[in-house]
Length: 291
Image (spheres, rainbow, N blue to C red):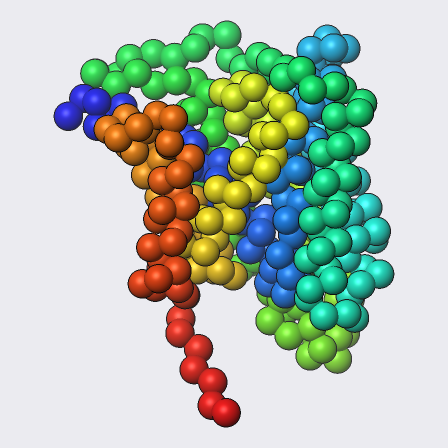
């Protein structure tokens, strides 16, 4: 039982990272009807920015965090203007291809600037963790869970109780009708890209002390988060959160009880099972079309 509780805590911590990145996927999909395959690279770029500011330049951690998040907000805006906006009137396929191209560009640019050597980002707290009964609570995992809970609560409040949030929801539901109502659709989509980049950046910064900061970390996180969005129900915010947490727990238990080298495969086994048995995901709904 002690091992189960320990694995559950670790799985929720990892799953919270997947949930944050999955939220970015969902928000952009709902606003633009396209999948941003560069969402994982947002996490990778933010982690490298933290290494530059906090490790290389030895700036205070809080200042490095603010600068890294500011950089991700700028990257989200540039991504919208350079990748999505020129193709906004095209079909979804060219936009998806452009996001894949942007993902490759970000990864290779980071590789050219920083090199292939993985980097280490120190954790926020000097205390690594503490025992609560039989369960060891790692402070970094606690921080990940706490920040994710705060961001989810903030997102609920923002979308349900603010005018800008309601405009964003209207834009995601019907862009043409939102424009007729006087909502600046282009501005709302810009805000969505900025917010999604910030979410991905926060996820990357939170998980960086747990993992090595490397070029490949973005692709790994993005694949798991993408699987989480499908499992939860693509386009559903609650589904992205539940899917991310579930995936983290499944991956952790699979590594502990079945195989560590194949832990990354468990997410995709679950994904294939959902695609075969319930392709609409946990919170998705079947859509029937008549010819």
